[in-house]
Length: 589
Image 1 (cartoon, rainbow, N blue to C red):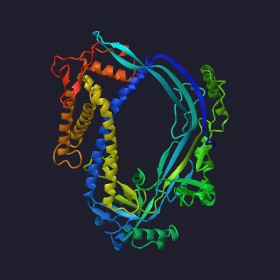
Image 2 (spheres, rainbow, N blue to C red):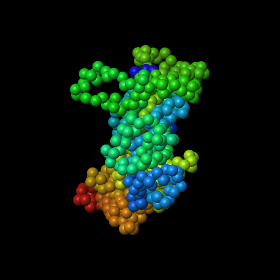
Image 3 (spheres, rainbow, N blue to C red):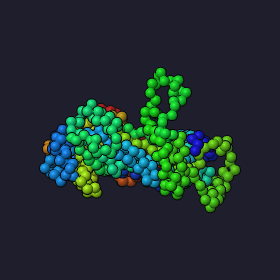
Image 4 (cartoon, one colour):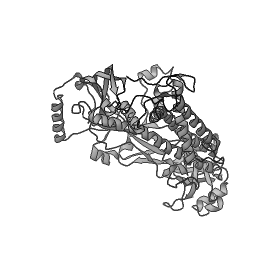
């Protein structure tokens, strides 16, 4: 398995004349641009809906009764609860209550059955797949030309466009985290990317994780002491357990999103599980970097754990073998004879069959090769928040699982359930606040994307109403973008959060009303202050602007007129707008 990238020089194309997107290319450009306009509001609305559901769920959780397994239950209660297998659960824990606890004793194994790999002591295992693929790099240099475009009424204007373009193609082959479809390459035959994916990236969770909660744990020192005792005591010895402790299983759905605050550690299988000796450069710079970051974030396991991999499905069907070099499993690509002959024919048709270059002599991976490595989350201490109940699959055993809150929407939604696993000692309030922060940050990310979307959207809306927002001053353009964003955000909050003052959280009551008023006022100022444009059929004007942005030829986007309508009294031909700025209509040529 080689890691050296390979570079090849592709063809150079010279296109004389305009660089317009014609034919199928133009249609695809328009469709792509329409998707860019339609998808962001849909994704934003879904994000705000998830934010609302998560906020209501967490608000209900923080106001619920929370039973502390390390504090509220004494030794007698813990022993009685475990001996009964949960039959007296309702007597000790109210039916509507959540449970919170900190466990310093974790017994878990995570397995990837397809490869036959099991990692003890891990709650989550992630398989990261990489593909050897060609990547096309395109560089284009064009001149700027001007042309006169005419409307249906005979009015005209000048526009700039790209012309006389020179396009260079280069290709680089290396390991990618995703597959690249080469069918649209300039030379797809010489740089063919097989789309095989026998072992896609995936996350696995422990199906039999057992947590031990001890009376009095909850402070960092107490948990660390309990963890050290567990490491020195024999495993699976029930007689050595603390008599004031409770063992429960952890439902795998609690780990579906991983463990918060726990970094992923790479797994490397080496002889006897011993970390390799530091390299020369590591020893040389040890005074500057006392501890190697790679060693800290790598978990070394003995090669004996791979004894079942030669008979696994991935090894027998897809020829995966362990090659090391950082914990990699590798599968070479083997093409069929018919596929190879077809590829030679395509190379002959595109003229690259005898295009031999120096990069072909470099030792590199073959396009279609696949490799992957593992990462684990294996915390020493975890804090959990959920509900406790009897395990239907195992007799006389308790399990902690997510709890679906009643007032937060559909029961099948992940945002309406409370099931948290955090690394370290965390109180229930800290866990809920951290989850709320994650939810709010995700919503802020989509709101930020909506701000960027509002810039071209405000210009397109202005075209529909006979305004050239893009040709106006920067202050008018900013007002248009802010007004579009605020109006859409306020309208979404009205639909999701409502407008009553009892709607708690961001997006309720006064915030929504102020946002709508500000957005409407800014939209009005933009309408009154922006430059006039030719008026015609509104939807036709919108299509012409989309066509212009998609770089389609002028005959695809013939405007009705370029002459602004000054008879409506919206704005004088020459003068100042509401912002006190000079405005000039478009000229007629």
